[in-house]
Image (tube, rainbow, N blue to C red; front, side):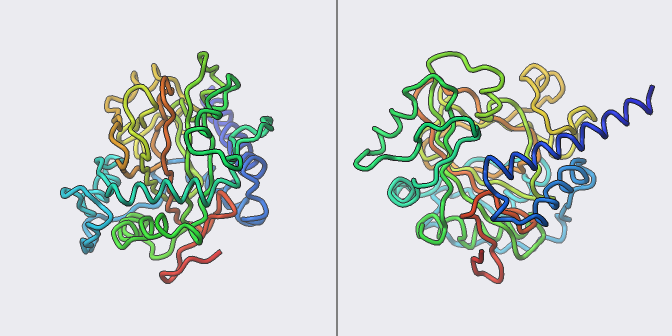
Length: 332
């Protein structure tokens, strides 16, 4: 019986890895951006690096952190890079901080005036137009996205760092590059940025719709080691989709939770004692290790807009706009 159990588990691991790689290839159209070698790499990561003890780690005692002065970008006086990295390594998530308000306004301008041309859904069957229309202002666009009942709760807009100066300067500031390099224990890394727009629905979502909209606990596994930076571009409270993270789940999970399949709130609460909720004003940002269990709560009122940034160990692209940061330069 035990042998059959583990054989079945291994089969499910390979099946999940195949499904996820196919999803990356078809829905995000990453085949041309990555090539077959990188897609094979993603498949291997989704099997071998599925287990926390096999993932790449960094020895905290060897960290050499030089705190950068980026107060023109970061408002929070208590922000310390070393504390962020240590919290990421130990708990899987950091505390929350604030960027400067003037930076926030410029980011919103860049997103809606320069990048809203390649919006995508995590749902390839939906063909409705989701790009901003000519002459449509931001509020009209958000209203149109939420004026439906079809499960379109999350639209993703890939950000082109080469033409988004303010976002690029923030994401590749000395402070954030320092955190990425020390956490990954690697000088060069993949970097990808997308804007996520989540809208309220008129009816309760189905389980399938919750999965599409990242509203069930799940973990990401597209790099052997990576961290995510989230920046709220609107105020986020209990009613409009705060981010939840299960602390230490990036390091310790039950065997059945190694599979790349979502788990319910009940299962999460029963098995993991500490769940961190991120609410905050527009401009709030925080880091997480995306390999830990996380989700967004359901949007009850008002749209939520946020930047989702990943720093990954391997050279892998989610979108064609993603780049590789090598020798302090962005390359395709």
